[in-house]
Length: 352
Image 1: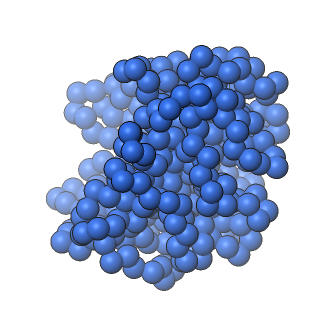
Image 2 (image 1 turned 60 degrees about the vertical axis):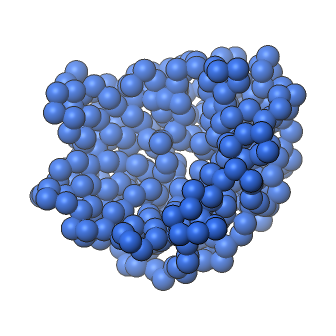
């Protein structure tokens, strides 16, 4: 749940996800330590071919190579994944793939985030009109689509993160404003509220988490020539967050009790450097997950189980700029197995 965004692809899940995933020819054995089942979805590239993969209990199952997973939710014995395949929005329940319903007028459609409550499947995404290229936030409940109204002066809108709490459905995203600028938007049961807007500031990477009656939203704020900074709201009220001298951006959000975790990256070197360090922040205090010589290292997803913090993302190596990886309590366990340094990323992590 994304509830937690981000690039936010999916194909048919091969094999039985819950009786132990089959070992793919290319994936090899993967053994991140854990107490409960750790699920991760992402992709990697070998010999010019891209594989979309699901990892469960240290073993990988390869999806359709034309799909990309964006988010994951585990409900009881059922595993749900949302994503995109062949420019259309899909979701998977266990080994069954379903293309999400949309008007034929929309060409490119993506399912960015998924949440399950009881028997209801909630998905948030974006649909782009094929002729005008206008982008609209979209919400599906049990595959019934609903276009989200982002309010007046909306040029384009994007739904990036979703959470269900009781009878309420929360969706976070952003819109671009006619004439310039962006606004962070929070929808509750289809009604939009702008958390912040500006004609000159860019906001992006919107993430949402609902904990009890509290609703948390995070994003980056980019006001050129200043560097990008992390912003956080609780119940619509801004929460002070430490600034980063060279810039930082969030990609995921998780709340455990009174502790707020934000995962993403912080820049190093010089202002606007492409070198980034994967980090998560616990109540504003940064925890570094390592560094690489090649640069673009990111935490895409975070999940907290008791005192254990799991994160998934990408980290570089001497031979590759981007390797898929899971961290547990800041210790990396690259998902390479018998394969040496495949290019790829973990997009989402869930512990059950």
